[in-house]
Length: 453
Image (cartoon, rainbow, N blue to C red; front, side, top):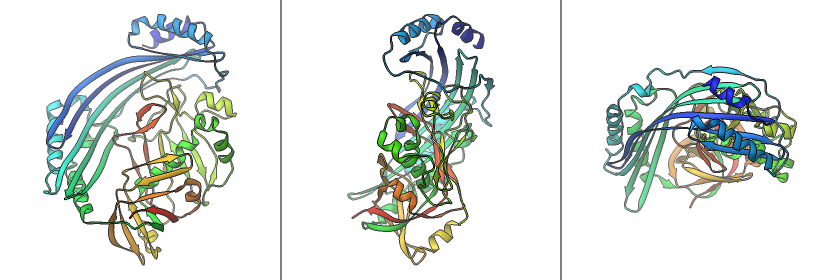
């Protein structure tokens, strides 16, 4: 593959050009309630070409590798007539590397029948309580090999295996309907989804227990959030604001997000780090052939970095961070997060809760939305805190506010740390779902606006 791709690039007349080619094999099993909605395997092969013109990019996706030279010539022709902004790229040292996936149990060696029986067993456990009316179980494993070559001499070949399962139980008591969800897996083999019977039972139990919980009362509270929610804050509320393509196009946000500005307490560190083996956002080279790295966005409470592609780095006088990613060969790479998290500090979960006179402990994540610096997140469940003790389970509430104010209001950061990947992913500019992980420790935040009854 290397000889073919590089030989094709040698003949193109362009300032810069790159080829991405991808081979992907996917197995899916999907239950809805007692019904098996889908089971099967599929394969895709295709590539994408980007050619730099003086005033913009051309991009072509293709499926017939044997016609690559024709596609390159067409992309070069289109680049010459592109009418946009001048394109400049930050320098990147040429790299040549072949990376193989590390798995204990390759999912390709496990029969589809065995995967079916595993999913059937988990789904039966989800449906076992009488009050659980329905379920959703999604299993998939993906084997991917990506090839990247450019006119600067870089050639990267990366193999990865993702194995993931998502389990949802939906409980009902009259008009009261509640659900609980758990996503498990990441980069790795079949071993990631084995032995999850206890987890399936726990999901059902949480859904049923929510039927008995009381709706939360609206107000302003001191809130303790679990690692899943702290990861959501890092990714959804702040990470997207740090993506340099979005930042560069927004004058108001660029004025707010000035490097060196304080956004939180001295203990607060927010990081994006792709090279964490096992996580959904794991990779060693991005889709521009730039090495992945650990990038501090906030360090000791101050904004110290953005996430960059080569193009945004050139525009903003920075170094590429290895965050140019595309969900498949059908799309050009754009600036995206990888594994985004808040670093742990010194307090235990028990200590963080014990210091709250009156507040809420929020756990899990059902969904939410962001609009620039404003956010609304819906936890799965929560507990009222009275005099440092969890006293009553609550449900049906949301957390809302301004992310910059909220970051300043963090008053305790836990010593625990969990990263979450699993099904789903991040969406941006029509590219979804992109595999990412989020996480962090427990956080205590004062004066959070809680929406409820």
